Length: 293
Ligand SMILES: *Cc1c(COP(=O)(O)O)cnc(C)c1O
Image (cartoon, rainbow, N blue to C red; front, top):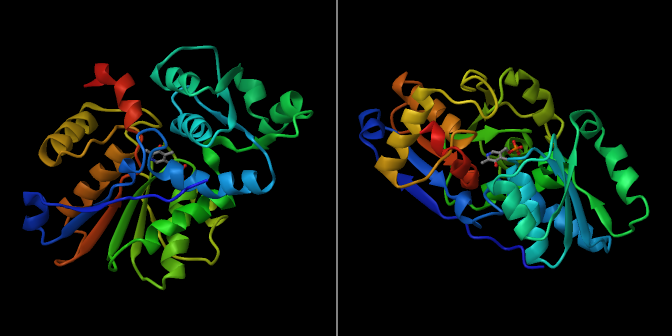
């Protein structure tokens, strides 16, 4: 299994950044693969290695009907010649994400919200007899996934003063924070939850930290909650994409970049600060949201 990646680092030049004397760079994890997008490749890397080491050739995982993780798992399974099953939360529906999952050969099992809650039981119920089946939690959340994300920090050519990253489960954030610790960097890390009431993420992130490490959790940029948008967020995304050529989406990266712009405008960064934003991908989700724009 060749799991090597290439994720370019680009500088973004905008008048706002010049006016505030900050340099902003973007880690283009979205360019790693069109469907195994961004952090999802990093998160799957050590899970795939573990499955391979255990001789398991059937990936079984979980997600909502718009889950970037489900699609990433389907695409990765196809690429590496593995079988894949996805438990999808809720009633049977059809959308672009699930269409692409199926196209890559993933078997989909729609599961009512009640049984979906107990993933271990679902797995046992369907796959107790399948010695090939390999359990991957929703969103890939696991120590292996965090480990894969630490490698992002190893790829950076110089030290940044700040790093911004969007959070769902917080696994990616934890991995990057571990990378900062490992490389003895005192970069300030900013986690931006995509969900409402994101304060719980501190526990989620902390459980994956190899060593306690300070970081900032900005819980006020959720725009109404997971997958919710406002006209302000949509306008921001249009402005950002049109002025940089970098496509972002409203669920994760749009909120994270909005937070960055807001904090720059508030003058929260010293002149000369070098700031990195992580493009965690997820662009496929945009195509179901055209009506919002
Ligand atoms: C899955 C995803 C995230 C969240 O990653 P976590 O490790 O669950 O915090 C962020 N951005 C995008 C685009 C994603 O698809």
